[in-house]
Amino acid sequence: EAAVTQSPRNKVAVTGGKVTLSCNQTNNHNNMYWYRQDTGHGLRLIHYSYGAGSTEKGDIPDGYKASRPSQENFSLILELATPSQTSVYFCASGDVGLGGRYEQYFGPGTRLTVL
Amino acid sequence: GDSVTQTEGLVTLTEGLPVMLNCTYQTIYSNPFLFWYVQHLNESPRLLLKSFTDNKRTEHQGFHATLHKSSSSFHLQKSSAQLSDSALYYCALSSNYQLIWGSGTKLIIKP
Image (cartoon, rainbow over all chains, first blue to last red; front, side):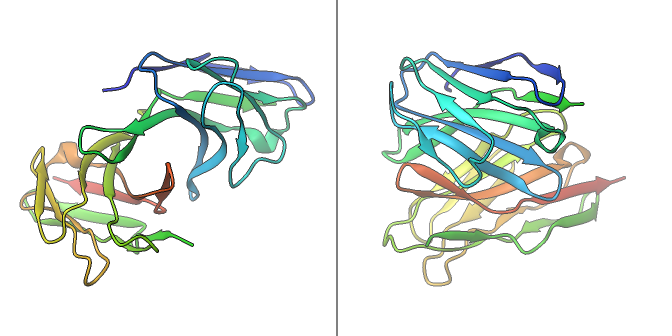
């Protein structure tokens, strides 16, 4: 199974501050994703990437930027954090699996609280 | 566009009873690939089982599901619920190098 790590695991930020969430994967997957998960909303896609240097907007990109400097690393950036961005953030990587079909694997998550 | 529907937001069952969580989908692709992910409390979603073969039962860790293209369904079942099955379950559809997620079903198993 894909190894995806995230840092930090927990973060408390102040309103208006800048927050960077980092994700690293060691399985050479082309695609990486950032989701947020809130009670009552399930998993919502923020940004994704098809490879180094590429970022694409997901379903809820407002207030977030993403950066993919290498195959292994994918960051989510909150330039001006707001309390509404308090959530659990998951990074995932994905590629074609053994069954010849596309699969995704998740990191452990980052719990972000914006005060 | 593609979509996944999980009709039950919350399912509460007594230990030992059968489990069935519903999942239906819509897609333009003739060969859909469906997943069930499970997420226990304070953990990340983990792949439970997957299928792309019509009318073939897929099993893993006591759970099973069968993809039925005729009804666009991929329901998750288990014959006897255990306390440890309490978790959030997501159905997902593979589409254009992304996963389209259902809204999730929270399963609570009581003694």
